[in-house]
Image (cartoon, rainbow, N blue to C red; front, side, top):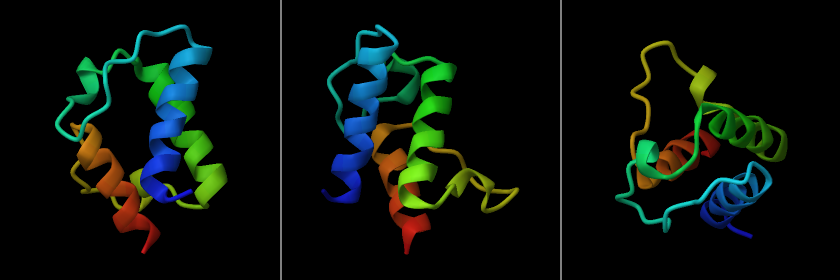
Length: 81
C-alpha cells in the first residue's frame, strides 16, 4: 500500500470508529470540512507515526500546517523522504 492510500485509509478507519460522517476525500477538501474533529486527527497522526515511524508535526517549530487533504498527504510524503 502506498503512502497516500495508507493515509486515506486511516481517515476512513478513524471516521468509522468515531462514528463521524466523512466527506468525500479529495485533495482540495479542507480538513475542517472533512467531518473529522481534533480527536480524530490526533488518532490519525498517532497511528501514522506508529506505522510510518515519522511525525512531520514535530519535525520543525516553524512548519506550515496542512489545511487540505492534499497538503496533509504531501506533508507526510515530504517527511518520509
